Amino acid sequence: MNDDLTHLLTELRRLTDAVERIAGPGPAHNDWSAADCFVWSPARAYLQPVVRPNRVDLSLIRGVDHVRDILHDNTLRFSEGFAANNVLLWGARGMGKSALVKAVHADIRGSTGAALKLVEVHREDIASLPALLDLLKDTPHRVIVFCDDLSFDHDDTAYKSLKAALDGGVEGRPDNVLFYATSNRRHLLPRNMMENEQSTAINPSEAVEEKVSLSDRFGLWLGFHKCSQDDYLAMIDGYAAHFALPLEPAVLHHEALAWATTRGGRSGRVAWQYIQDVLGRLRIPLTRD
Image 1 (cartoon, rainbow, N blue to C red):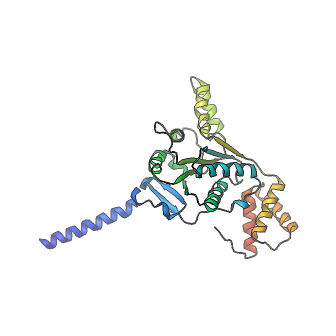
Image 2 (tube, rainbow, N blue to C red):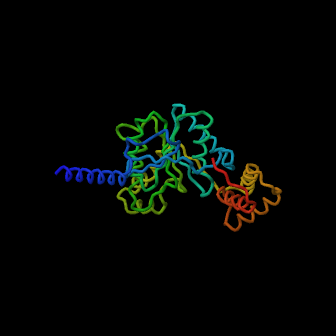
């Protein structure tokens, strides 16, 4: 009898351990000291630490000086405990919107030592924002909740969850939380979606207002536009100086412009892709923060 009971208890422990491994760590296991950046996993209510974030030094982001300074000042004020705005970075693809968010966060962390954390929320997890805010409101840290490439398609109602989270509902948005999002669309919604709503609604103007009001929840709109040739070459020169590339500027510029032609346009992403090609050809290691 005792042997049977012992065997049964052993099996129960094995089953319990297996279920816990499948479920993953819960909220009690969230460790803010594990990293400066995290990815939100709503299924487990878990903040996954990102020990080595994919980011570049702030000094390497060129051609967006004006919006860079605005975002840096807004983030610095927030890290110091003062009033700051939610930010929507919108505009041309490949111009460093998401890179700028991560670079500014790293720069402020490094220069001030502020207890500032960055939590990325995937687009498909927007509906879980209330649960995330409930978790974040009790932390002693200042937290930027970041959603990259945010947009909504026709019949997508997840934007209503974002609107509620930005406003904060009855409780209000936690004072220690700020929202940063990037998008190719200024209003986050496709134009045909707003036009369809306008044509089928009983009151067309109210339907459009409902959609456009989402982006109005962001106090700062920072626009990113296609870069000029001079800005593009300035990006190339910045990377070349950073990696000490042993190539003449004239050669770099000629190759970089040819590279941009094959890519169909100039942008910060295209400049970085060209530099990676040069580093590979010259067998120069690509180091990361």
